[in-house]
Image (cartoon, rainbow, N blue to C red):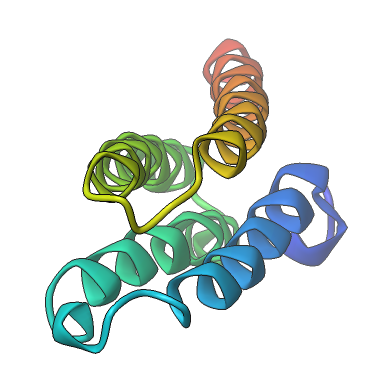
Length: 120
């Protein structure tokens, strides 16, 4: 196991995705600041945060649980981004690129979960 969660590629990628989400949502309409924008940002922040929290607990079952929460946040994020695109706040090409990143992070999370479950 890594000594620091920041060494995990899945954390690094999800953190970079979070930064990208903040930049993109900064351009959303002001009327969405306290609704869709906040929800999207919350989902994005939840992914690397739950990876870090689980790693910090050092109990495998807790770690796995936190990783599953991160997976749930990925699904929330993707759904909210799809809605944003349908509302015209997000370009279709950008949605496709972000979805590709989301799918890669999800695969990495599931692989990490499987690895941890096999160790139990």
